[in-house]
Amino acid sequence: MDLTPLDLSIRFFLQLVVILATCQATGWVFRRFGQSQVVSEMIAGVLLGPSLLGWLFPSASAYLFPKASMPILLAVAQLGLVLYMFVVGLEFDLALIRARARGAALVSAAGIAAPFALGGLIAWRLHGDAAWPLFGERVTLPQAVLYMGAAMSITAFPMLARIVHEQGLSRTALGTLVLAAGSLDDAAAWCLLAIVLSAFAGDPWLAILAIGGGGAFLVAMLGPVRRLLAPLGPKLERDGEMSTGLFVRVLALLMLGAFVTDALRIYAVFGAFLTGAAMPKGRFAEEVTKRVEPLTVGLLLPLFFVYSGLNTTIGLVATPALAGLGLVILAAACVGKGVACWGAARLAGAGARDALATGALMNARGLMELIILNIGLERGIIRPALFTLMVLMAVVTTLAATPLFERVYGRRATRAGGAVSAG
Image (cartoon, rainbow, N blue to C red; front, top):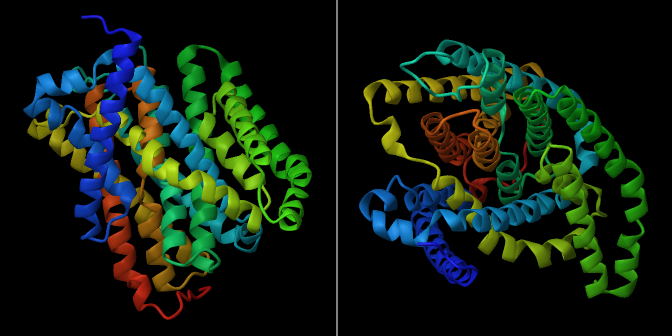
């Protein structure tokens, strides 16, 4: 039966009720195990998809999440992603990166090269194998290698920012190192993805536009635009509060930044992040964050995790062979990111504890992994079975990040003032 726009609107509000209730329930459970809300929302997405709800109650799942409603869910989820990455950018202090540039570059290089090599090796082994139809029919071997390498190289940058903030590490050597390395990792991974997408479309100009245009956008936002926005900070201090008109102009600039990077094919999340990074810090950033963050984190962002979960079918990997492949992918992910970043941090002069913590945090994939996987699935680069394997890898590595970090450093409450050595 075709659904009318009114039917879809009614169904959408019911989806919101179920999504929010499920995320709250999983959050309550996983907080008992020291996990962040982001982790619980990733798991809630899988539970609401065909892996559980669709398996146990297929009729209810089909009613709640009809195919016709998916574009609406995706559009609102994208808005949540843009707003969230904007908040992450608001909290990102560029001045701190300069002090740790060498260490961040080493950790980032290791966190890209090692997982890229291991991911590319897996793709090389599996591509074209009739028994393992994991890539799209039109995907060539170089495209498969580049995509898998990029997907394995991604870091959960928004989650890193949240953990660093929650653990009181924002202005410490460790916090600065992982944030800087994570941002560089993700930028490189998205450049690789741009090359894959351009090759897949048969248009090299897409890659040139993405990388060249993205670089120009970055320079513009962190240079001239940042200087133009700087007076807004003192103005807010003088006025004492942010007017509605100013807040709307900030949102309009954010949406423009998201549009530009989306048009450049490096996706809206980077335009949002760079727009946030260009904003004045201090009272101005705090005021904008106070207005944007609660609705974004509480309502909009969970929709993206559920949208990803609706594309995740654990039953597709129920065979021993595919389950074994899942373990290989997980091992490659942990060695490529965690171990490589630990070694690079040690080479950069970090202490043993800082290096272990760096490896644990950099190994998380989280939200950014889900974004790159959804793009690959929508473009036909990967098939649902590989999508599911990679989502499960992202969930496990993200689940492990906080407990491993706290095992190395202890909980924030047990650390004296959250001090971290420079190493």
